Length: 119
Image (tube, rainbow, N blue to C red; front, side, top):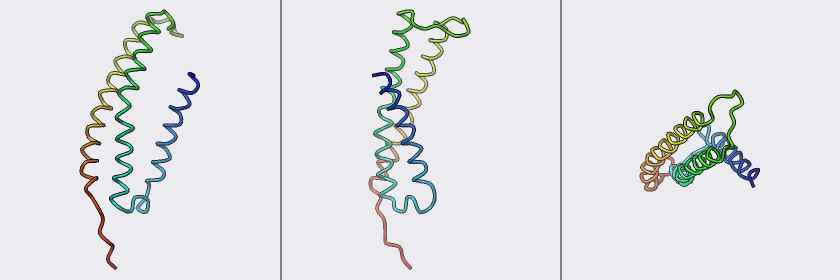
């Protein structure tokens, strides 16, 4: 099961790299509706990230309470876990802010069409 989770995260990263390659250059996103479609899909993806970060945080809390965390340099696992939890919390807040901005952009893009190019 854990291998599948890691593979899904790796697949998501690869998909974003593919999107970045596919959207590069002036020929890639030729019409506003295509920009809208991509933005709408990315919005759906971003809406899920805060839950992912919350679940990662819950796992770290559980591992810490069960005594499963050991730091390879011998430092305190509790302090390290607290730091990880702070950063994951910040990531969740950032993802929510990014999602809010993307929703605003997507709502405008949804109404954009295109006109025929004139020679």
